[in-house]
Length: 252
Image (cartoon, rainbow, N blue to C red; front, side, top):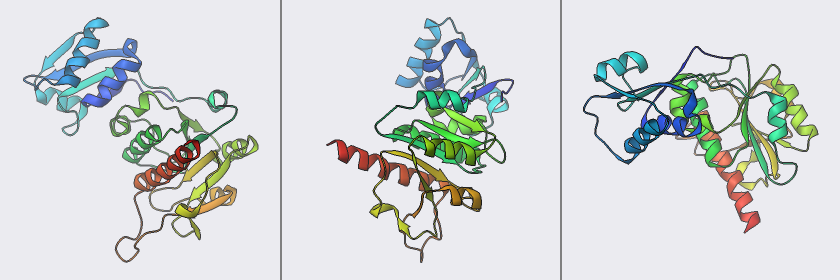
């Protein structure tokens, strides 16, 4: 799936995009009078190195391109990011040793997708897997929330998520599903080094068919008297942090 162009706003997101794919940058706009800092200086240096002009524009012009919130006085237009094919992604996975894949089952909010990609990169995931139907795409909001992770981390969209998960299971991955009603306790669970973590939609959680596909369902212990459930991006970060902690401890 492609868009006509990808609009990237914010210092971290633009800097990450310029570092990873400068040749795909079509234009750069900075707000007139924007305060200089180290990140902006690095962006300007990269732009000069690759022959890109920075157009100084009124902030209202950036608002019209990106929206009024989140661009931090800097907007760039790029050739759109492309999704990674499932077979290509499988070839990038290490043949042995720890590997974490994040699977998203009908997560529809672009902000949650971006936040999950950011956490996935932070905690060493190899990539993010989603279905094509009822799933958030790499919109500007998702790219902004990813804060540079979308430039680095593979996002794989598949026609049939269950079959893709079964393929990973056949290749030795253990499929753990996040389910707030599960009896399994995340903090008492020993993760397999090769794990797929499945997270469900914002409202309904994991679908019935993905739950049945999971090898184990786990919940985060929490004070239900105060909070009924965690946002999917927060829950995903907690799960991935625990996996990362266990893998680090095993290597110590």
